[in-house]
Image 1 (tube, rainbow, N blue to C red):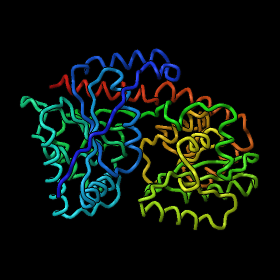
Image 2: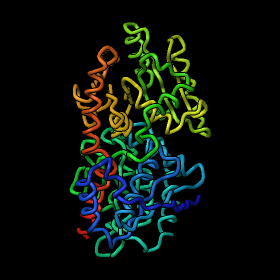
Image 3: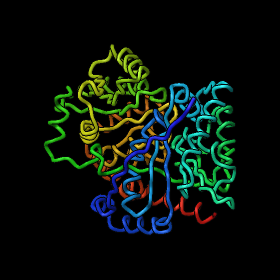
Image 4: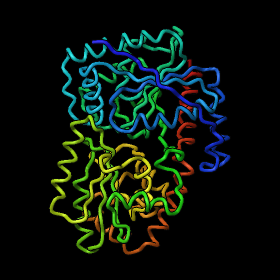
Length: 417
């Protein structure tokens, strides 16, 4: 089994393009954070078929880093189905699922990653391995980035691994020993095995220039959403789904049933950008449809109904509330996208939603249903919470702030060499 590293194009984006959204001070802070890395060559590696929105996250982060003067590259680890299956199993295990990786499959995965890593040569000062791309650490000497002169290795974890499966964690921790630093979205997401002086917290952020997050002309959202079948004369709540095993639309539907019993005009929109090639996504969509079959006004929208980033952005803007439910919540971007659109969030984590300020945590269906009713009946409260949420995102959770935090972590690792 062989693995390859596909080079991804990065078109630099000037930090000044973000000034209207983030503010001048945020741009100045970003440029200051980039200064220590202007002579460093930084390579990011993600894994093909990775769960979640890592490609989207890097697609906003890396062009901005390049525009700030950092010599940055991006490659994607890919290979035969067996390699992708092992990488996916590792990532699932780190999130708390069952990895069930056979020793022979793991050995083949490491061998393939070792060969791919050695093909890089010595052209980088820093290599950032995202989630399951950690396998490439097998191709670097332990303590890389030290006196031996190799690149500094960092492992970037996007998910909450605090309850990782022991087998997956043991395999990952052995590889992480070769890394000079570990980046997590929050300190609480790291298991005890990774809680040492190499740990850096670097929360992610949304790209305000992505089509999903752009400000839309006042009449455009309605024109975009109406053809999808949403009745804009009635309020609706929204959940944006990944259609993977970690989504929890069932609890959302339960909460909606409670709210609809009190507010008969309410609608629920479940929006998912469906991967046409992913059988699991089709199965998940069918299961959701079956579960909601006896409930009126539940609308499941996918790519096949014309859903795209622009449509998701319009739905986020027009919804009375966005519901965030997951079986293994990490530092998801969806709540921040909703708050950036001035829409309050019901659900999520205290790290992302301030209870009673820009949304409600509401962990149980009964609580969520009651909070949805409250926001439907009090549009003024929804507007007030949405405004508070947008300001918090502007201050802390745009891609400019996310890149600033990551650059500080990278610079600390490089300087420690």
